[in-house]
Every structure is written in C-alpha cells, then in structure tokens.
Length: 316
Image: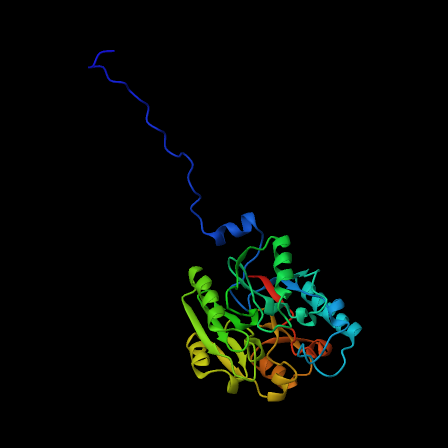
C-alpha cells in the first residue's frame, strides 16, 4: 500500500432502536391494567378495601382512636360486606388487602393509605404510630394487582390519602394538619404537578378534624357538600369559581357523629351515604342527587365511614 492510498472504514452504525415517545398515562392500560383516578365522582370502577380481620378482635380502643363502645365484630364484617356488595351491584371491581398486621384495627380505613392518581398510587405514610406499617401491605397488594406505585411518602414526611381530594384533572385540594405535614404535602404536590396538575388548593385542616372527607365531599361534577364552618373560605371560594355549588351541611351532629359528608360517589349524581343523616340526605336530594343509604354503624365506631374504607383505584 502506497502512502497515497486511503483505507475506507465503515462508519459505526446508529442506534437503530428508538424510544416509544408516549406518556406513562397512555401506557398504563397497555402494560399495567385499567387503573387511574383524577376525579372524586366519575363512574367508580375499581376499589381497594380491607375486610376487618384478626386486627379488630382484640385491641386498645383509646390507643387506636376507636369509640369506647365495644365493637360487634361479626356485625362490623357484615356491614363491610354489604358495602362491597353494593359496589359490585353498581359494576365496581372490589379488591381486598388480604394480609395485614394483627395489631392495626384502623387498617379497615384504606383511603388513608393510598391516594390514586392518573399514573398510579401514592403510598401514604400514616402520622399515628398506631397506624404505621399498614401501608406496607397495601403496597404489596397493589403490586400484586399491577397498580403502579409512583411514590411512597418518605423522609420526615407524613401524608394520608384522605388529605387529598381531586377537583378536576388539573386541580387538587391537599390539606395539612395532624395527618399531613409540609414535607408530605410537598412530596404529593411534586408528583401531581409532574402529571399535569396546574392548581393545588392548600387547605389548612382544623385542629378538630384530621381529613378532608370528614368535612367536604363532591356528589357530582358541580355539587359539593361541606361543613362550611370548618373549611377555609379561600378553598370554598376557589371551588365556587370553578362552577361548584356548595351545599352547606345543615347538621353539625350529622357531620360529626353520622359522617354525613363521608359518602362515596358511585357516579356523578349518585352517592352511597351512611344511614342516619336525614338532613344531609334531604339537602342532596333537593339538588338532584340520588342517595343510597347503608348502615355502617359498627365501622363508625372506628371514627371513619364509607369514604374512609374505600380506596379508589379506577374512576371514569
């Protein structure tokens, strides 16, 4: 080979493998399953629940914030089964957390342990020592079902699922208080903004209450019932400006003792409500909301009701 001759070396080929340029929300039904929530009222299709197990058979009521009145365990289970049956009658797939710690009677309140988003679940970190550890078994069950876990609250944060409420796909209320601190709030906010939520309505939880669903709940895409003396003006004002009619719960006793705001929307304009709240029920019905009632009197002894025992996995 002479000095004037050149060697022709083939170029290294390009990658030839290219990414699928889709959003995770688009891929979710293809690779994970039919999951996702961005509403409190659209057609309910799948829920996660914990049927009361051994954990309710022997426990310290004061330590676990239960009523001093003894719980009728068999009746509690029957009432829980009845709620699940009503869900099934309305086309809802009911999944259960089948494994749980035997020293956690509050585990029946699944809403507190997970907040569902359009991309998957945010696993809570309960504030109370008496509830820490419940979330591990919820995470395990979600993984078994194929529900993506987009975040687990960590660090010094704490947050419970009932401290967040969907208003619409771009708006969420998050409350801080004894069950959600600033770190927990910011972790949830980060994930929601990454998913396209544009407006976070901060709600300061009153000292007398722990979760949003004890004070406020949506019955349709334009009606919210609230215990207005306990919900900040700015939150209700923002909801009104978004087109919501605010129904003022007429009875403090029904809200506090009967969990009159703690209902579950099966679809827009149809709710499942605890029995024993005639004034709240009448007000909803006067505004065109259909109401089904169910007895959850034994469950209420744990200071929670229908919304508390139901973690939404799929709506709409």
